Image 1: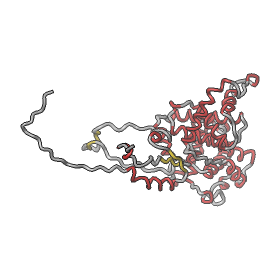
Image 2: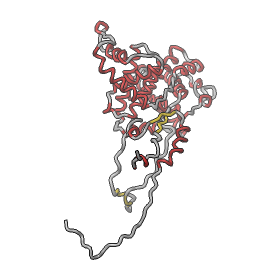
Image 3: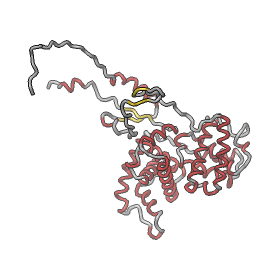
Image 4: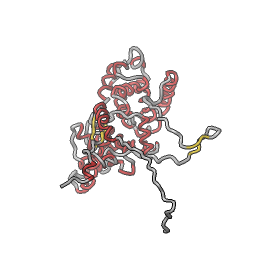
Amino acid sequence: MAPTQTDQDLIGPHPSFIEVAKPYIFQQRIQDCLFAIGMTEAKDDNVRLQGVAWIDNVRKSMQLPVRTFNTAVVYYHKFRLVHSDNQYNWADAAAAALFTACKIEDTLKKSREILCASYNLKLSPAEHLTPDDPLFESHSKTIIGLERLMLESSGFDFRSRHPQELVIKLAKACSFTKDLEGKTAYKISLDLYRTFAPVKQTTSTMAIACVELAARLHEIDLARVLGEDGINYARFSTSRAEVMETLLDLLDLYTHHKPSTVVGPDYPLEYYISIRITLNQEASASSLPRYTSKLAPPLTQTNGTKGKNGTTTLASPPAPIIAPISATGTRGQSGTVRFMLDAARASAEKEAVKEYFTVEEEEYEVDVEVDPGKTRRPR
């Protein structure tokens, strides 16, 4: 059988798309994702705090370790940055994040057990249900389906960061009292996961910020934490700007959402405002930006004419904003999506197959003689 024209045009299989895992997502990218999916700041705060509180309450009910809580919240944050809130229920996303984290941290729990624990929180002990109850049958399938989207949103990156261990070590090094400053620093590390700091900062940056804020709340000598006798930032590969960004994220949380936190209700609002004023003065004096690692916006050409007063008149309306898609969304329809952790390897493969995506076109001008005596046929 002779090959068809279509078979001759096909050189080979599609080289596939590559999705590189992103262990860190900076504030600029977070704001772009939230804007693209139409999520306002107030709505984002509400959904984020509700989801994290749900995960925290359920994991305490199931007596899961704090490392499972950390991983679940990070997966929940990354999932929300990719999928619009009209595509899922925030409680289902929180349950799927906790279900995925249980597998990653080797604290295995069935989806039925997680749903049952959440349901029993609303009931008295006499009315508690068991995980085998038919009530959780259909809902558990939904959670299992969302698990795949959780893994895709994170790029199948199973690396996780747990700052609590370093918080304890730094608290001991700074001679904190275990039941006072040390306990507060540990609680702050839990509240930190109610912000986007865990997806932006390293473990050492988060731990140092928690220890410093605890020292400021208890009004102890800051020389234990700052200065030459304090924590050496270079040893932990961090900077004052990154720690300052994390501190301000925490203070934003305690100032605007104080009842939704662990440490917030323990201190009056004036404490947090006073600390924030002090840190703002330090940031202004040292010229520290509010958010670090910010990229300059790309240069775009104006579509229109420029007036005398400097205003630009658009010749056509701007292009609509395209919301971020899942890793197997539009790209997965015409080729396989491959997930990688090594960015250098992914860049090398893209460079190798780039020539196969280059479209080469040639233009020809052909002179056609037209018979002047030939008339056009009437319609």
